[in-house]
Length: 388
Image 1 (cartoon, rainbow, N blue to C red):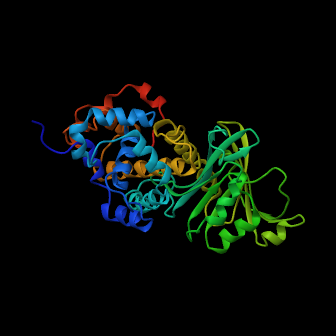
Image 2: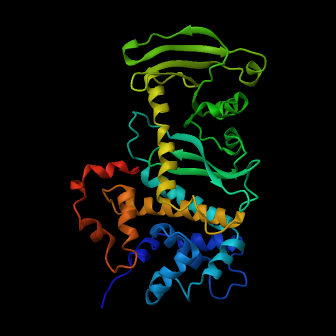
Image 3: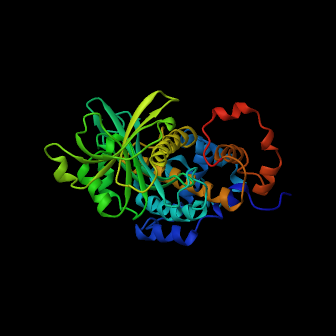
């Protein structure tokens, strides 16, 4: 007879259960619930994320086929598609949003000493958004265009560990720059943004909060050069200037000096012009900081490929937000487990192992050690890998 905990149970043991229950109680999630609690709902949805289930019926069939093991997974009673659908439809999604936000500081603490690839002690955040297309007839609340629905995930990513520190979900027609209104700036930190976030009033608010920004300038940006600093053109740098904005409204919206750096990337044969309020770092380091912004693009591609956030188990706004926040919570939880267990494999590899081992009575460390991942074929690099 198998002994030991199921792999799924070993993962869920890393959940702070008291914190989870606190989130549930805050929104009265278990009010008048007799059998299928919010914890059972979370476990079922987490199982769906980890095992790549396609639908509610898929979840129901898989879990019912393992009925004798459900108790050991922490799931009480029989799983029914209608019960799970009703829970996703009506139970407040903010429970799972708050829980994911509680997991994020724990993950960041574990990854805070990871190498950034740049000699920099300060925290570096990348800001961006991704659009998830939806059918407007099925999701009428997700307004985007006249005949198309969508939602946006606005994300602030901590580049040490690729941990999302802030996620805001909005309809697809909300502009990216609005995320800056909800941002609580971290003094001394760097915020890396594309030119879609240029709003000098909001950038001035960042600067007033003692935070630094690095943003790509628009081609029609008007300025007056005060003086230039010496550069090494062999590195690709074209200029390092101290400027003041000009124009009709920009000088009033941002009344301080800016640093303008122009850089030519030989790999892509592209000219980049960056604006920043940091005058201390070398110009080449500023360009490297912006290059690291690509990690947020990889993060979006990765979660779309490996988590269930492109097709949904329900059509209501509550069901969609519940699924996305549980997916984020699972992502952060797996990152925590990987770091705590000192697993020297990519997150993609870890998820693939878990997807076929959730019902096994075997230690997670033993699962990883059974195969020599250092000799895997190079074809595996075609997948997007975070946490290498």
